[in-house]
Length: 120
Image (tube, rainbow, N blue to C red; front, side, top):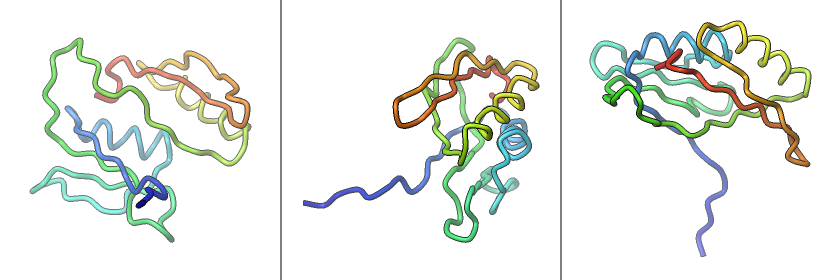
C-alpha cells in the first residue's frame, strides 16, 4: 500500500498578501524563495532552501466574512526550546498577535497564538 512519507508544502489564500508576506518573512523568518506578485499573486517560502524550493505558499484572493475562521493551525519545527521562547517574544511584539499558551505534548512543546486579523 502506498504511504505518504512527509508533507510537501501547504498553501493558503490571503486577503492582504503583502501584510502576510511581511509577517511570515520578517517575524517568523521564513525565506522568500520565489514569487509572482503581479500576474499570479503568489509568494513561496522555505525554511530549508538547500533541500526545498518551498514548504509554504501564500496566494492573494481570499474572500471571507469578517467572523470567518479559516485556518485552524500551522505547525513549524524549531531546534530548541529557547528558539520557541524567542518566537514567543517576536509574536508578542506584533500588534494584533497574542500568545495564548505554551504546552508540553510529551515529546514536543507547542505554542498557540492567534492573530486577530493581524496577518489577514
